[in-house]
Length: 321
Image (cartoon, rainbow, N blue to C red; front, side, top):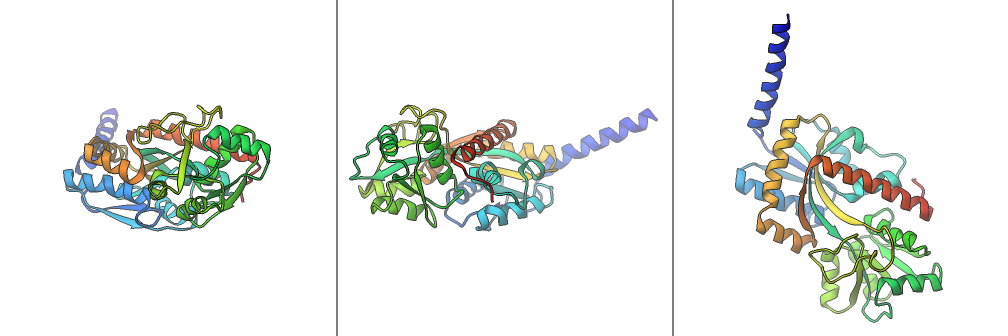
């Protein structure tokens, strides 16, 4: 009897190994919770196009924007766990949405497994070019002098930009007034026109206004200086402790996807991310660093970020809706 059990176990193991070796045999769908052209969309396209070039795999990017990412992420959660549906997502979907919403059509822990963190990028703290505020220390001093009078724009309540700004306020022990806009571009424009005092945004959205000399950068939101913008100081350098808010982009699969397939996806993605042209395109498009973080370390990062944002929300009085 033991002989038959051993034979069955061996057959299953060999079958799983073969499954990973033969994969893929058809097109792989990549669900994206944002419209074409955004950081998540372009990051996914950069990596998958390089895999196609190197391995001749076929990917179909399926953009399903809206509803705080619920549409695309919910669809990915319900997809077959066979390696033919991937999700490209960023910090907001798994580290912030659970803090902001009581009810969601997905649960990160129950529904997904991480494959790879593709990129990691800081957010920039920007003010009007004519503002007397020239540093994060100046910003904190202005907020202390007039609690609630310092205004900041964001792409909307619950966005990673909004929560990064709240993190700055909480860590600095100040009160600021949030002004939501319908997107990141309008929020940066509001700073350029003087409608709000500052915003937190990614480099691509800030660059046109920087080049037009309408805004200036007074710092970044990550714990370490960024190789993409090495001259900008961190919040911690300015004496605002613990702030480490970044925009990462990663690839995920539905839970239950065979380990051999996840390993294969990680290997080909990491291989693509080592290419100089891929690194350059991620830096130019998203102001991001190609990182190729593996599943275990990526999972730990997501959980740590979720706990940090949960703490920030409690400090500033944000309750899930």
